[in-house]
Image (cartoon, rainbow, N blue to C red; front, top):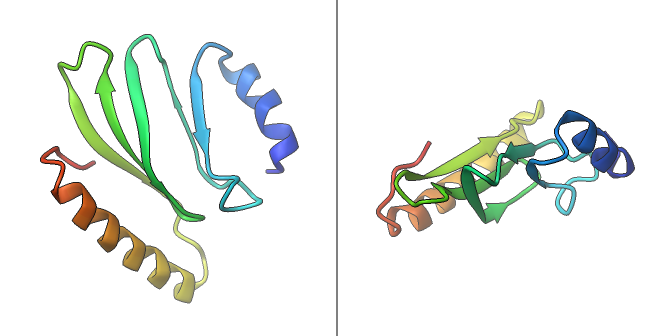
Length: 101
């Protein structure tokens, strides 16, 4: 989906939720991550054209974890790239001492 349509569609889905997307890495914006900011805090750790990795916690910090949202490209050579990027991301997350989803 084109970036110009993203905000309109996001507001139609839920105007009170927050959104992070990867248009800065992919003109097709393959990944959108929505959350309710009254419940969750989301900090982006890393992005690429095929994944967004975040540290997620409840607003009261009782629950926290790392989450990675992945788009696996149809092209096998590009999937190999995302696996290499995810291994690098995993090494960074291991230093944070939180679970990874």
